Image: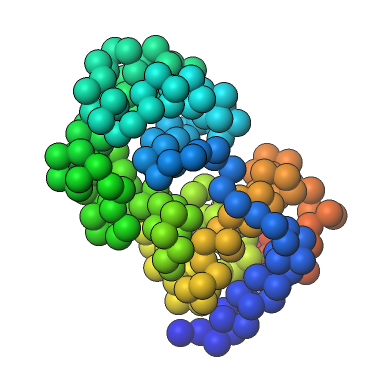
Length: 215
């Protein structure tokens, strides 16, 4: 393990904590399965849009059993504005059937079991175990991957590879909030197409800002 990367991670965590002292998942939910479904809907869709769609969806289908018994075409009508709605609706219904039939209508608390569910990848699984169950987690979405590359904490765009690299240098108890803070930072400051580098609390640590990217 590179000690220099570990020290860099400590500085980044400290600066992000000062800038974003109170953070949480941007998706709104009340029940464990609702976070699972909302996260599936968020693929290639904004959290803001998902939060506009889910209240009516969860009112119509209030339980795992209701989703499991749902007609896929009806679910599609509620989530159409989220994009990829055919695939997402199919995954949601099948996921809830699995939860009902295999997991006794309980959302699993391990990444290994969660990724067995229809439409659930490691990003979603990490979010669930971190936010719902308080277990070590590293949610590597596009913001996390892009920003940690800029900062020299990770290399490459493969989510699983970046997750493993970050687990080497980010303390387990810091992982989920570290990722949430990077997401907020990516949306408000380190915007992909128009970064506000002059306002960034991390600019002194950023390879891109310093002009030494790739060195």
